[in-house]
Length: 211
Image 1 (tube, one colour):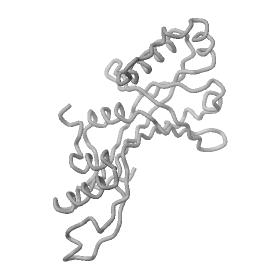
Image 2 (image 1 turned 180 degrees about the vertical axis):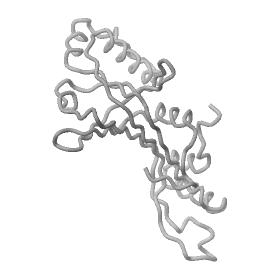
Image 3 (image 1 turned 90 degrees about the vertical axis):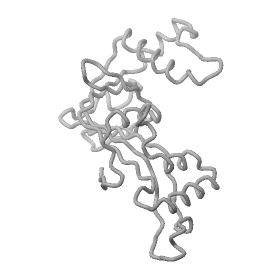
Image 4 (image 1 turned 135 degrees about the vertical axis):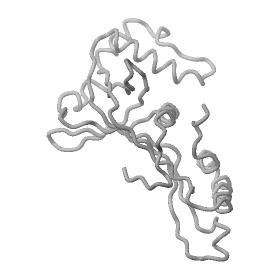
């Protein structure tokens, strides 16, 4: 990941909180045929001082059989992103030397991957995953709501994934390299298009610093 100084994330805890807020990972791994991409929702856990990503894939997924473990995998997490028009910059009225850009937030995690097929591990993982995301649902679903024999059948069709994080990098590119008047113009521009999530990141690029 290219990290200009204006946008480089340095706070590991903020980046981990970002992953919790935007948990869908684009997972890139190396196979005998070259690079392979998968898309997996993941949880962040801490174990013995290490931070670990947990998820699962279908047992028939090629990553379970054809993986070059000599190379770390890369999990990319993406937050809000949006086109920025130069017309939103008040400074354009006096200095027309400006061009469009794209604002975004992203975190890249690399590390070693391992797989789990143990039934108890998988059930605990699925319980944690569903409980995490059901918090915002009015009538929340629990793993115990489904018949035991049905869950047991589903468990046989998946493989658990763990990535022990060895490196984490992040960029928050939300107009920090512009004066406040231009930043306010971008906030108003995003808001006018209904891109309120992106607007909130321009307003506060360190959203998770105080949480």
